[in-house]
Length: 329
Image 1 (spheres, rainbow, N blue to C red):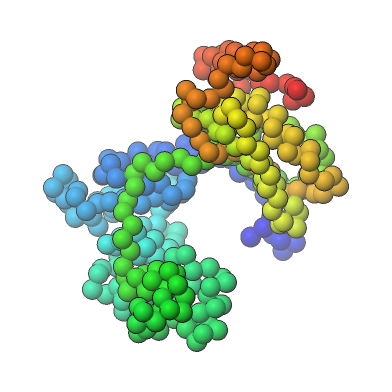
Image 2 (cartoon, rainbow, N blue to C red; image 1 turned 120 degrees about the vertical axis):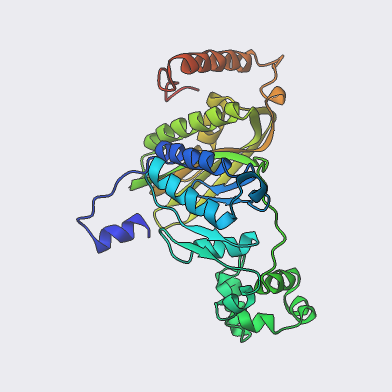
């Protein structure tokens, strides 16, 4: 629920700021416990991941259900939080299982009962079927998954194209996606949602500066840089605004990311209140191809040296030991 709606419903509510650094720390702790069971762990977000346990009996001498029950207990004991688990023979059904009995459920769907289990569920339960396509299916008289199970695959493809094949497979409990433990990073970004809408441009720039620092830090940790700098805003009315700029010399420099993002922000109209701002880099490349020495612009070379010096100090004394001035140009 959006914050502004929560405030209307409960004006006396105490709203706490999100603590992303804490969430990430806990997420990595849980991920380490997962990797004790299998190296095939595919994180989907901070609070969700797929595990492939198909080859673990030989190693642990325990069936997957027992391993997952033990994992739940370990997470509760060492991390202090409850988790929901879904166990099945493919990713789609495992995800469905994990959502059945939150916040601390444990559900299992076997291959033999999968079609019966799905038959009376709404078509919106199918992965990738959003509100618009749900309305389309409903208008065609298809309300639940069992109705899709009864339609020939040729007819579904004829009606809906490639998505027809997709919903046929999922409706019949089929999902060929494998667990990918080393998914390539496509972008690096950070964003923040405000507890109160912000209109002041300087405040937005200050927040943008901090977000740029975080993006640059993650880029360096992963040995990457980006050709495209992206700015994201969301207005008080939940309208999303995106701007981007592609540069010839890919970068991982905090100052450069900030300056480009700030320029993008400058080109967006004033007199608007915003509830979210984010910055990121995409079209990622290896850091060896980033911020190459510029024979013409010596200032850019100096920025690189300054950035390296600041990072050296942060590595030695902590990330908050020194920061760029907010008004640097």
